[in-house]
Image 1 (cartoon, helix red, strand yellow):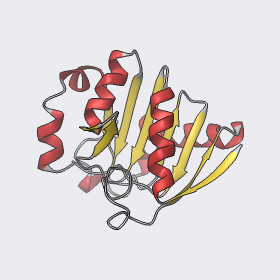
Image 2: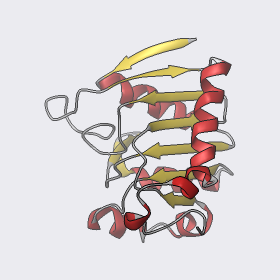
Image 3: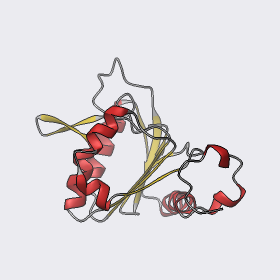
Image 4: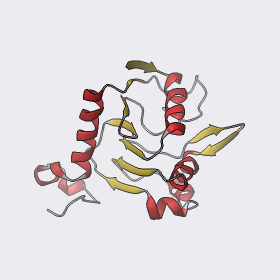
Length: 172
């Protein structure tokens, strides 16, 4: 199955998939901001949702391009399980937007992990996004490979951006 998603569909589909994750959730995003999501009748920080998934035994990996802003950092400090058990790496060359759910399903698209792309912004303040959601093995494997190669530092040895890399994945 390959499903094309756009605009508000991102939010509904990705929140549904995150709720179904049982063991592995990988996120790759260029931009990362403090964002809120619906949880029942409440709005909660996305970070609270990630901590909840960790409590349920989900392993989370986060790749992003730059340090998030002050609001995100302040919220992050409220969730000690994220410090202890979420794996995170920075790479200034990350521009892909991937979410991998249990290494069986993938979102590949344009949405960063920001309120305007993925959070609870109104449709009048939301970015115009597009992507695909799939469980097609070939596409999921390609997304896993790309994420994992960056995660393991494969491009680091030949990277032309070493001077701006503050958190090198491997020592060069």
